View 1 (cartoon, helix red, strand yellow):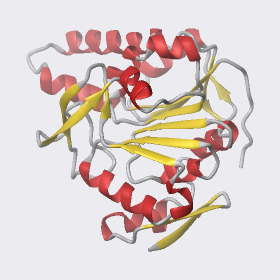
View 2 (spheres, one colour; view 1 turned 180 degrees about the horizontal axis):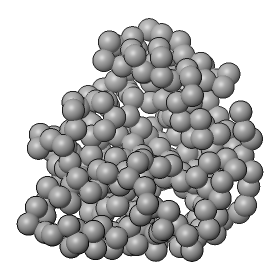
View 3 (cartoon, rainbow, N blue to C red; view 1 turned 120 degrees about the vertical axis):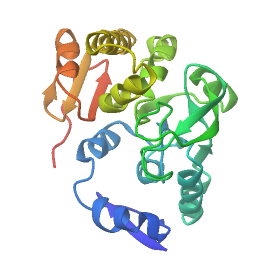
View 4 (cartoon, rainbow, N blue to C red; view 1 turned 90 degrees about the horizontal axis):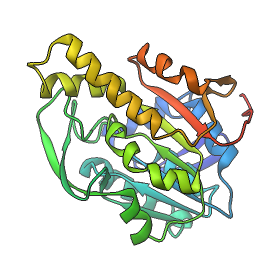
Length: 267
Protein backbone atom coordinates (compact mmCIF):
# COMPACT_ATOMS: atom_id res chain seq x y z
CA UNK A 1 0.00 0.00 0.00
CA UNK A 2 1.16 3.52 -0.80
CA UNK A 3 -0.14 6.87 0.44
CA UNK A 4 -0.30 9.58 -2.22
CA UNK A 5 -0.93 13.30 -1.78
CA UNK A 6 -2.28 15.83 -4.25
CA UNK A 7 -3.04 19.42 -3.26
CA UNK A 8 -3.14 18.39 0.41
CA UNK A 9 -5.64 15.62 -0.34
CA UNK A 10 -4.31 12.21 0.62
CA UNK A 11 -5.50 8.66 -0.04
CA UNK A 12 -4.10 5.15 -0.27
CA UNK A 13 -3.46 3.10 -3.41
CA UNK A 14 -2.12 -0.32 -4.23
CA UNK A 15 1.60 -0.74 -4.85
CA UNK A 16 0.92 -2.95 -7.88
CA UNK A 17 3.98 -2.67 -10.12
CA UNK A 18 1.88 -2.02 -13.26
CA UNK A 19 0.84 1.34 -11.81
CA UNK A 20 3.74 2.13 -9.47
CA UNK A 21 5.45 4.54 -11.85
CA UNK A 22 2.28 6.57 -12.23
CA UNK A 23 1.69 6.92 -8.49
CA UNK A 24 5.38 7.49 -7.66
CA UNK A 25 6.46 9.86 -10.44
CA UNK A 26 3.52 11.16 -12.46
CA UNK A 27 0.64 11.78 -10.08
CA UNK A 28 2.47 13.78 -7.37
CA UNK A 29 3.86 16.27 -9.89
CA UNK A 30 2.13 18.37 -12.55
CA UNK A 31 -0.13 15.67 -13.91
CA UNK A 32 -3.30 17.31 -15.25
CA UNK A 33 -3.06 20.47 -13.16
CA UNK A 34 -6.08 21.95 -14.94
CA UNK A 35 -8.13 18.87 -14.05
CA UNK A 36 -7.53 19.28 -10.34
CA UNK A 37 -8.18 23.00 -10.45
CA UNK A 38 -11.55 22.22 -11.98
CA UNK A 39 -12.26 19.58 -9.33
CA UNK A 40 -11.31 21.99 -6.55
CA UNK A 41 -13.50 24.72 -7.97
CA UNK A 42 -16.71 22.78 -8.58
CA UNK A 43 -16.84 19.94 -6.08
CA UNK A 44 -18.85 20.49 -2.92
CA UNK A 45 -19.66 18.26 0.08
CA UNK A 46 -23.39 18.70 -0.56
CA UNK A 47 -23.32 17.73 -4.22
CA UNK A 48 -22.39 14.72 -6.35
CA UNK A 49 -19.76 13.97 -8.97
CA UNK A 50 -19.71 11.75 -12.07
CA UNK A 51 -16.36 10.46 -13.35
CA UNK A 52 -16.74 8.81 -16.78
CA UNK A 53 -13.52 6.94 -17.42
CA UNK A 54 -12.19 6.58 -13.87
CA UNK A 55 -9.26 4.31 -14.75
CA UNK A 56 -7.53 3.30 -11.46
CA UNK A 57 -9.02 6.15 -9.49
CA UNK A 58 -6.76 9.23 -9.32
CA UNK A 59 -9.59 11.72 -9.90
CA UNK A 60 -12.34 9.59 -8.35
CA UNK A 61 -10.53 9.11 -5.04
CA UNK A 62 -9.56 12.77 -4.98
CA UNK A 63 -13.15 13.82 -5.67
CA UNK A 64 -14.54 11.51 -3.00
CA UNK A 65 -12.71 13.64 -0.43
CA UNK A 66 -14.57 16.71 -1.63
CA UNK A 67 -18.02 15.66 -2.88
CA UNK A 68 -21.15 14.18 -1.31
CA UNK A 69 -21.01 11.06 -3.48
CA UNK A 70 -18.80 10.15 -6.42
CA UNK A 71 -19.79 7.80 -9.24
CA UNK A 72 -16.98 6.17 -11.20
CA UNK A 73 -17.51 4.53 -14.59
CA UNK A 74 -14.75 2.24 -15.90
CA UNK A 75 -15.14 -0.59 -18.46
CA UNK A 76 -11.53 -1.84 -18.68
CA UNK A 77 -11.42 -5.02 -16.55
CA UNK A 78 -7.76 -4.58 -15.53
CA UNK A 79 -8.21 -0.95 -14.55
CA UNK A 80 -11.48 -1.72 -12.79
CA UNK A 81 -9.93 -4.36 -10.55
CA UNK A 82 -7.19 -1.90 -9.57
CA UNK A 83 -9.83 0.77 -8.97
CA UNK A 84 -11.79 -1.49 -6.62
CA UNK A 85 -8.60 -2.40 -4.74
CA UNK A 86 -7.69 1.26 -4.32
CA UNK A 87 -11.13 2.09 -2.97
CA UNK A 88 -10.90 -0.75 -0.43
CA UNK A 89 -7.67 0.78 0.85
CA UNK A 90 -9.65 3.89 1.83
CA UNK A 91 -12.44 2.62 4.10
CA UNK A 92 -13.39 6.17 5.09
CA UNK A 93 -14.30 6.87 1.44
CA UNK A 94 -15.89 3.55 0.54
CA UNK A 95 -19.47 4.60 1.35
CA UNK A 96 -19.02 7.77 -0.70
CA UNK A 97 -18.10 6.00 -3.94
CA UNK A 98 -20.14 3.93 -6.38
CA UNK A 99 -18.28 2.21 -9.20
CA UNK A 100 -19.81 0.82 -12.38
CA UNK A 101 -17.94 -1.66 -14.58
CA UNK A 102 -19.45 -0.46 -17.85
CA UNK A 103 -18.78 1.87 -20.72
CA UNK A 104 -21.14 4.71 -21.52
CA UNK A 105 -22.11 5.24 -25.14
CA UNK A 106 -25.02 6.01 -27.45
CA UNK A 107 -26.64 2.59 -26.91
CA UNK A 108 -26.97 -0.12 -24.28
CA UNK A 109 -25.94 -3.74 -24.54
CA UNK A 110 -22.37 -4.78 -25.30
CA UNK A 111 -19.55 -3.28 -27.38
CA UNK A 112 -15.90 -3.99 -28.02
CA UNK A 113 -13.36 -2.16 -25.88
CA UNK A 114 -10.04 -2.02 -27.73
CA UNK A 115 -6.61 -1.80 -26.17
CA UNK A 116 -3.82 0.35 -27.58
CA UNK A 117 -0.83 -1.20 -25.83
CA UNK A 118 -2.22 -3.21 -22.92
CA UNK A 119 -5.43 -3.25 -20.95
CA UNK A 120 -5.22 -1.17 -17.82
CA UNK A 121 -2.91 1.44 -19.33
CA UNK A 122 -5.60 4.18 -19.39
CA UNK A 123 -5.97 4.21 -23.19
CA UNK A 124 -8.56 1.47 -23.77
CA UNK A 125 -11.32 2.77 -26.01
CA UNK A 126 -14.56 1.93 -27.77
CA UNK A 127 -12.91 3.24 -30.93
CA UNK A 128 -10.37 0.88 -32.49
CA UNK A 129 -7.04 2.53 -33.22
CA UNK A 130 -3.65 0.81 -32.78
CA UNK A 131 -4.70 -2.71 -31.82
CA UNK A 132 -7.44 -5.11 -32.91
CA UNK A 133 -7.44 -6.85 -29.50
CA UNK A 134 -10.57 -6.19 -27.51
CA UNK A 135 -12.68 -7.08 -24.50
CA UNK A 136 -16.45 -7.32 -24.82
CA UNK A 137 -17.89 -4.93 -22.24
CA UNK A 138 -21.32 -3.95 -21.00
CA UNK A 139 -22.52 -0.59 -22.27
CA UNK A 140 -25.15 1.78 -20.96
CA UNK A 141 -26.55 5.13 -22.00
CA UNK A 142 -26.30 8.10 -19.67
CA UNK A 143 -30.08 8.13 -19.33
CA UNK A 144 -30.04 4.53 -18.09
CA UNK A 145 -27.12 5.17 -15.77
CA UNK A 146 -28.65 8.16 -13.96
CA UNK A 147 -31.95 6.25 -13.64
CA UNK A 148 -30.43 2.98 -12.40
CA UNK A 149 -28.15 4.65 -9.84
CA UNK A 150 -30.43 7.60 -9.01
CA UNK A 151 -27.74 10.12 -9.89
CA UNK A 152 -28.90 13.67 -9.28
CA UNK A 153 -27.53 17.09 -8.38
CA UNK A 154 -24.21 16.80 -10.16
CA UNK A 155 -21.67 19.48 -9.36
CA UNK A 156 -19.47 18.26 -12.21
CA UNK A 157 -19.16 15.61 -14.92
CA UNK A 158 -15.64 14.63 -15.94
CA UNK A 159 -15.24 12.57 -19.09
CA UNK A 160 -12.01 10.98 -20.31
CA UNK A 161 -12.83 7.99 -22.52
CA UNK A 162 -10.09 7.97 -25.14
CA UNK A 163 -12.06 8.82 -28.28
CA UNK A 164 -15.39 7.37 -27.14
CA UNK A 165 -16.54 10.92 -26.41
CA UNK A 166 -17.40 11.41 -30.08
CA UNK A 167 -19.95 8.59 -29.73
CA UNK A 168 -21.24 9.52 -26.30
CA UNK A 169 -21.59 13.31 -26.22
CA UNK A 170 -24.29 13.60 -28.94
CA UNK A 171 -26.41 11.03 -27.06
CA UNK A 172 -26.15 13.16 -23.88
CA UNK A 173 -27.49 16.34 -25.47
CA UNK A 174 -30.98 16.22 -23.95
CA UNK A 175 -29.62 15.60 -20.45
CA UNK A 176 -26.99 18.33 -20.74
CA UNK A 177 -29.51 20.80 -22.11
CA UNK A 178 -31.89 20.13 -19.24
CA UNK A 179 -29.46 20.17 -16.31
CA UNK A 180 -26.40 22.00 -17.70
CA UNK A 181 -23.87 20.46 -15.27
CA UNK A 182 -20.33 21.78 -15.70
CA UNK A 183 -18.58 19.36 -18.04
CA UNK A 184 -14.85 18.72 -18.04
CA UNK A 185 -14.14 16.91 -21.28
CA UNK A 186 -10.99 15.30 -22.64
CA UNK A 187 -10.91 15.07 -26.42
CA UNK A 188 -8.73 12.57 -28.28
CA UNK A 189 -8.79 13.50 -31.97
CA UNK A 190 -5.89 11.23 -32.89
CA UNK A 191 -7.78 8.20 -31.54
CA UNK A 192 -10.81 9.07 -33.64
CA UNK A 193 -8.75 9.67 -36.78
CA UNK A 194 -6.87 6.38 -36.36
CA UNK A 195 -10.16 4.56 -35.89
CA UNK A 196 -11.67 6.11 -38.98
CA UNK A 197 -8.66 5.17 -41.09
CA UNK A 198 -8.90 1.55 -39.94
CA UNK A 199 -12.65 1.37 -40.46
CA UNK A 200 -12.70 3.24 -43.78
CA UNK A 201 -9.35 2.38 -45.32
CA UNK A 202 -10.88 2.65 -48.78
CA UNK A 203 -11.78 6.33 -48.21
CA UNK A 204 -9.67 9.04 -49.79
CA UNK A 205 -7.89 11.48 -47.47
CA UNK A 206 -10.38 14.13 -48.52
CA UNK A 207 -13.36 11.96 -47.68
CA UNK A 208 -11.85 10.97 -44.34
CA UNK A 209 -11.25 14.63 -43.52
CA UNK A 210 -14.82 15.52 -44.43
CA UNK A 211 -16.18 12.71 -42.25
CA UNK A 212 -13.94 13.74 -39.35
CA UNK A 213 -15.09 17.36 -39.54
CA UNK A 214 -18.70 16.17 -39.53
CA UNK A 215 -18.14 14.22 -36.31
CA UNK A 216 -16.40 17.16 -34.63
CA UNK A 217 -19.21 19.51 -35.67
CA UNK A 218 -21.79 17.10 -34.26
CA UNK A 219 -19.97 16.99 -30.92
CA UNK A 220 -19.75 20.79 -30.76
CA UNK A 221 -23.42 21.23 -31.68
CA UNK A 222 -24.34 18.80 -28.90
CA UNK A 223 -22.67 21.15 -26.39
CA UNK A 224 -24.30 24.34 -27.61
CA UNK A 225 -26.09 24.87 -24.27
CA UNK A 226 -22.81 25.98 -22.70
CA UNK A 227 -21.83 29.63 -23.06
CA UNK A 228 -18.28 29.40 -21.73
CA UNK A 229 -15.45 27.13 -22.80
CA UNK A 230 -12.01 27.07 -21.17
CA UNK A 231 -8.87 25.24 -22.27
CA UNK A 232 -6.85 26.41 -19.25
CA UNK A 233 -7.55 28.32 -16.04
CA UNK A 234 -7.23 31.63 -17.85
CA UNK A 235 -7.84 30.83 -21.52
CA UNK A 236 -11.39 31.05 -22.79
CA UNK A 237 -12.31 29.82 -26.26
CA UNK A 238 -15.15 31.64 -27.99
CA UNK A 239 -17.90 29.27 -29.13
CA UNK A 240 -17.60 30.57 -32.67
CA UNK A 241 -13.91 29.63 -32.74
CA UNK A 242 -14.12 26.20 -31.13
CA UNK A 243 -14.40 24.23 -34.37
CA UNK A 244 -11.40 25.99 -35.85
CA UNK A 245 -9.38 25.39 -32.67
CA UNK A 246 -10.20 21.68 -32.61
CA UNK A 247 -9.48 21.11 -36.29
CA UNK A 248 -6.00 22.57 -35.84
CA UNK A 249 -5.09 20.17 -33.08
CA UNK A 250 -4.47 16.39 -33.06
CA UNK A 251 -3.15 16.29 -29.50
CA UNK A 252 -5.43 15.43 -26.57
CA UNK A 253 -7.08 18.53 -25.17
CA UNK A 254 -9.05 19.17 -21.99
CA UNK A 255 -11.98 21.58 -22.19
CA UNK A 256 -14.25 22.92 -19.47
CA UNK A 257 -17.81 23.74 -20.54
CA UNK A 258 -19.88 25.91 -18.18
CA UNK A 259 -22.88 28.23 -18.21
CA UNK A 260 -21.16 30.91 -16.16
CA UNK A 261 -17.89 32.75 -16.52
CA UNK A 262 -15.18 31.97 -14.02
CA UNK A 263 -11.52 32.31 -13.24
CA UNK A 264 -9.92 29.29 -11.66
CA UNK A 265 -7.18 29.70 -9.08
CA UNK A 266 -3.79 29.15 -10.66
CA UNK A 267 -1.10 27.25 -8.81
